[in-house]
Length: 334
Image 1 (cartoon, helix red, strand yellow):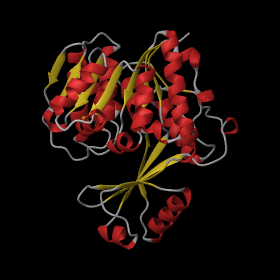
Image 2: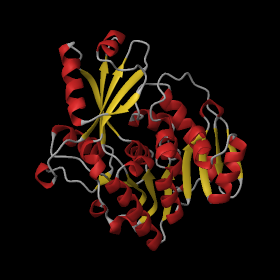
Image 3: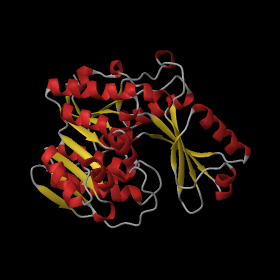
């Protein structure tokens, strides 16, 4: 049976990018720079408005926070599996083919007949001339990922499972996350969790606490998420709380670098770069870090690799690095 470095559980989204003018946002009554969850009707209505103003999709890319992380693991040379849910539509085809090209195995079939009807999740990303993104996300069928979508036989053959924090926002996906943790604990597989977004921590802290109490070995978070979850006002106090609750964590601090913990704190220096798009930086860091610790690197070494990956990502547009960029700048062995 194939052994995986990382088994991920998370959302399946396709990022559809549009280049727009700020006047469109004003006419559509959308606040610039925001990220909003929208209904199917709102999603379809927005696409109609974009088409009416002759704005067309300029780029599509596979997305979803944990999916970005899992792809990064695979690009670096790790073996990865991803549990998700897509519908029998064109966007679902795109998402699965994109994962297949990245050599990531999934629970979903490329055959539409094997999938449920509905709409695959989509993030409509509208980019103004100043490079700022305004995003509208419709989760679609991905919020209905269910425990039966898990593959226990592959979880038990993995070094870590990796749980996307956005799963706490839906009853079905939260139960899936809890079941994945239970399967991993029973099999002696380590559990990693990312807090994903400050809003998730603020509104779903109880669910996060339930997941953490179920058994989390490694936590990923940024400064704001750490402060919110720990209920502290300084990063020093937040780190003390994290140390008391987790055997390992990776805390990203933006341009100040990161701090990783494996029983000892390690300060990771940032890699200087000119940031043009920070979308997916935390996902990229997590992917490189997870690859590192499951392929012989220490936490400090994996943190340095994660910092380098995040720095490289933010220097260009998009939430994922190209394989060529990974091969040139991040490969740690042939």
